[in-house]
Image 1: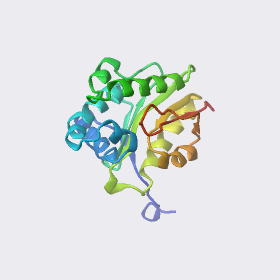
Image 2: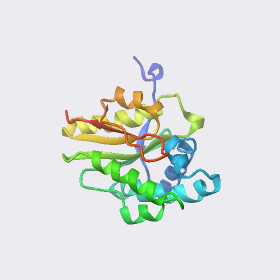
Image 3: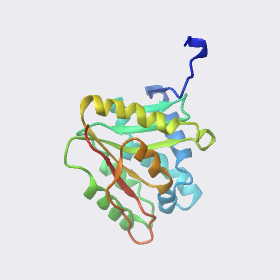
Image 4: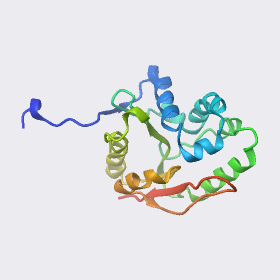
Length: 196
């Protein structure tokens, strides 16, 4: 097949240091209707003011590690934390929404209970701008990472905050480990992709 006739798919690249704010912005858009996120930040002003700081605290170390990825010029982004790198817990605590601190702390405790003990990559955040969904971009972000995990024979872990996304993760080898739900929170689904 000649290059002119080749079918091109979504293109995944590293997030450039100059484009960190673009990656954060696409994640803010991507999570604007997410069940767990909007339960935590129900007020739109509070969400827009606070969620960027949560992105930095929860997944921002991916920018430092050069493991943040974008797809199709920031139509979507994924923040992967390599083995041994954790979210910034002190900064994360500072982002907890007023009035939900104790419930959110319990949610994060539930998440920690499911984190694998074995060496693994962690995906705190992945999302596609709603204007660019249903075009394979989320799958491209996952597929790009899965190739690395398989090459290195290492596990990967995530929590799905939206049950609608579980089939996408399952197509990439992730298995649901259980359900995390605290008080009135919507359920989160911890998922593991075992080393292969």
